[in-house]
Picture 1 (cartoon, rainbow, N blue to C red):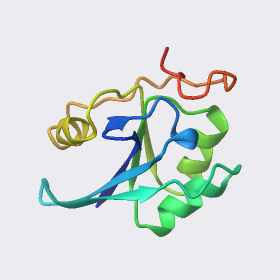
Picture 2 (cartoon, one colour):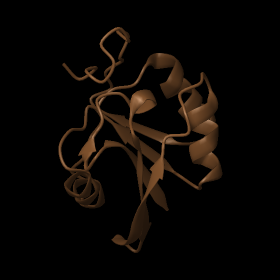
Picture 3 (cartoon, rainbow, N blue to C red):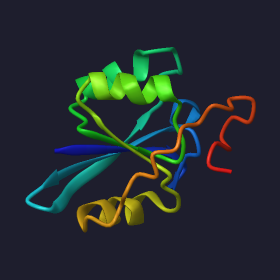
Length: 118
C-alpha cells in the first residue's frame, strides 16, 4: 500500500494541487518500508489523481482539497484524507496508528493558494 502526503518541504501542504510535491510512503504490515519525494508535475484539472494512481497510491493526505478533486480521487479508487497538518513523517505515523481522520472539509477558495486550511 502507498500513501501520498501533499508536501511543502517536510510539512503537509494546505492545498494538494499547489504543493511542492508528494511524500510517498510505501507501507507493508503496518510499517513504513520507505518513502520518497515526488515533485508536483503541475496542477491541471483531473491530472494529479491519475498521476498518483499510476504511482500506486491508495490514499492521499492534504490540508485542503476541492470537491472536484476529491471526487476524481474517489473515481480513481484513492482514499482522501483532508484537514491534516504538521510534519509529513508524523502524519504518516498517525495514519499507521489509525489516528488520522479526515475532516471532510471542502476547499472552495483558491484565491488564497496554500491556505485552504485557514
